[in-house]
Length: 388
Image 1 (cartoon, rainbow, N blue to C red):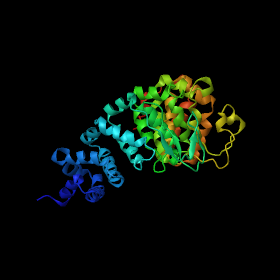
Image 2: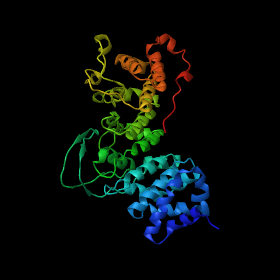
Image 3: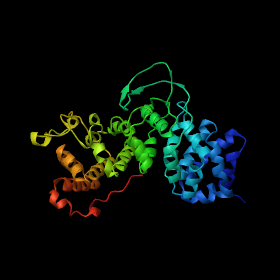
Image 4: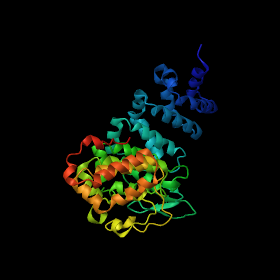
């Protein structure tokens, strides 16, 4: 005799819409239990997974629950389930179509599911080079606007206007466009696209992904990572968005040859990364003349209500990014010249998290050490792992 759950999962392909909706809704809770993955969702030669693929394109409430189930299943650590979806090009195209559709109510769930799927290296490497049709023009009610470098400002428009989310065929360009333009519901009132930051964080572990993020694109003449950096400010991005971008920034700094380019100011042909990772670490402290001499302009005379990044995980990611930038003598010299030490000193005094304080101490140790002794440091003392 089949159990009640086994009977329920058979209703995923029932011809009655209401029955399918009840089935998907009830199965959401079971998708978080690892024990049910093999016994329930992988039964009958993965028939429930096949049903869920189709339900993603069903009516919005059913698709919502199907996407939630799939996000839970693909995030469970089961490689068979992950690869089953990640290596289905038709299914991935369905997700991409929904993500760039500004009318799609489940766009954020699609972003979260895609963020899980790119943990499959085969899909990640394919997406970096993939192309698809340019998204069609659609009517949207714009709430925000962003310039070519991704700086976000307000623009209130009462009536919907016709616009094109992206004019590029490249998948990464399309994802970047909806991520930047769609912050805080500015493209789609049902979505903020924050989980796309996790997609880019995973892609930034690959050489081709780093190349895309760090090279000026012919599509719009902008270096993609400069569009992401503006969201390191806690006032402009959600925690999910900030965590993902912190991962991107940290991962691209593993390529030591790019350090001068990353630290060089935009006006000098670089990325201008330093202000965007130091500002989240800085508070409203006033520095004396000795500390502030040479400090980046962006970090001087900060307002009295300036707050630090509140999340310790993000703070640690930026500290470890700075540590990576100390790999070479040239990098250490830059960080000393722009007075990183006083910022880290104050951060160490104000934060109590063990990981934050330990990271601060490691960074200060490198910055304050005599260069003659630097070559004697064991590389294992500064081992840092890639994020995502």
